[in-house]
Amino acid sequence: MTGAATGRGRIDKRRAILDAAFAVFARRGYAQACVQEIADEAGVAKPTVYNHLTDKETLLREAVEAAADVISAECLAAVGRISEHGSDPEAALRDSAHRMLRICNSERSRALRALTYAQLTTFPDLADTVQDRTSHRIAEALADRFARLVVAGQLRAPDPVLAAEQFLALLTGPLESRSRLGTRKVPVAELKTIADAAADTFLSAYATR
Image (cartoon, rainbow, N blue to C red; front, side):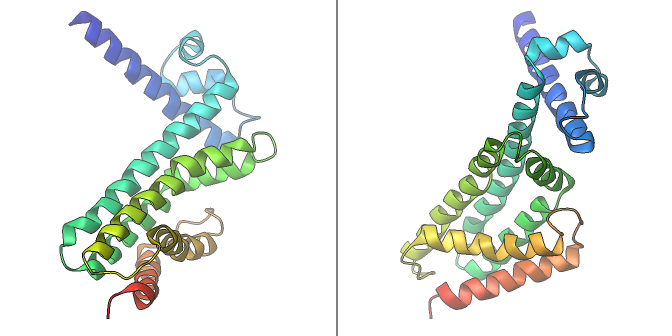
């Protein structure tokens, strides 16, 4: 019992450090952030940070990965709702699209984009890491849902992978524009407009007649 509690405590402390690191890096940038500030925000001693994560670069990379994983999990849950609407793929698409846009418009998502863009010169591979853990995973899940709708005769998409890519583009393109590359929080009403327009355009191309 003690061992389990100790293990859980270590996991919780590591999560607190990664959350604090992401917040500090997003707020101050990689160059200006310091490990002591991260330790203070996490409520731990500076040596504790180094015990869990060996250096500042590792802190950045793992904090970015953790934030990307949270966003990905939330979006995957939204995609999963497509199968919950039974024979109404239009309602499913609109619901899923709106949920994904709200997630991508969240403070965490906008901070992740800003931090990734800011570090393109110093850590160019971070962009690949974020894409692999977010958009690529989400596209795969969408493609799976679309393939099921095709089999059920509710969608006519010869290439579900391409259809998923196009649907995401219909969502993220307008969001990036209206959010000014993530620097502006888009109002909920605008998110609904984007989601509905994306669903309308997608269904006009792929819905069964």
